[in-house]
Image (tube, rainbow, N blue to C red):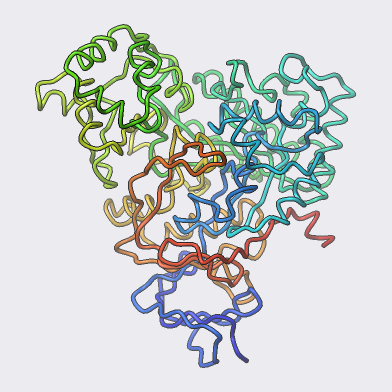
Length: 575
């Protein structure tokens, strides 16, 4: 037999957690057909000597629903060893959607995604109304990644209730309609239902997104509709305003998991913000108790803090101040020229005193960049590399005897690409390690496709390998790969993925164990219409293989788009 692809002489880390071993991997027809010493001829051979050969990573918390329509690569996840993504999290989806409501739906997503409605209009070819039609549209698009998707609660409400979706509770008949649409979506290929109760999820006018208006009875009936079909995952953005709200939320999740026997997922978070903030230990304990009792519950975790990101080319903390607003309306070159004027510098530094004072309200990345408070300069880091040892602006100000705003101005003059990072959630590294150490915590909360110029979590996987495996040595490579491949594929019910095993889909990556790391993010203007976003690439990922085809080599697209839509079990059963 002539193989389509032979990976020769690599060090295999197969996703099971067992020790690495040296082997060839043979691929034909999009599947792995052999692991061991392979002598068959092949149409193409990749020399993997000195490289790790592992399953492609699974990123289970993304928001690529709009991006998939214009970005066949699936950036930035594709740069970090990801071969499969789950999108449509937290209720944010583009279907179902009536033609007359397209602009409204796009506007509603624009705050969370940080993609302007104009960019969405330029990039999306709206050819669908129903969820099955949207799924079919994604199937037709060229894709370098595999995509699975939920049907989103906010979209369901807006479709069934119209403008009342963002103000009113649903009637019993409207709830029944939504439940039927959930079942239709599951039959078409949705992997479940997503919603959000998170207080930071807002519309552009500052009001709650549609799913947050719903009563728990509405959500429960949709979960029950999934249970009727014995299919579907329930994913939700958690209530994290304070510990009391989080405890009540956990009780609801426990009830759903045990009563309806559907997998339940939510983000595990802790923070220093807010009064009586939620504790990750309480959340992890609730997950463990449900799983010990026979339910299925998973916490979606990060591998580093969730951060608001600032730069001269995107947002700075001072953009809302009149003196800064005038400056920031200018092209970058003119901004820097004005910053060199001593009188302008004095005005910009003095303006900071008029900022809203820091309060104890918990902000997400969107509010932190668009409605900022006076910065805590001890919690604002000037990135110098990717080793997670950057100086704070306060430290730099003390070292140079300058006002923190002067430090930022000086750095923007020295390098217009200087990036700043403000941790907002999961700020403590020991907390992150504690969360990741739990078996039911999935390393899968990147948010790729959302907050595109405000946050950057797409490097979740390469940061895990670089920091937690190589630097801290808190996990072995085998443990880390298992968490990002097998464990995620199992939790999201992605059949025949997540392991290097004969018969499985050939989603494979080749990387340098000691060199793999994220690069520093940059601000690019590559969205439709030239809109800006953060882009973060990686070093050490030598090749990505999706369904047997090489899609990325040394960080560059091959122009091959072999990704598939990964459908839920009801659709797969009848395929």
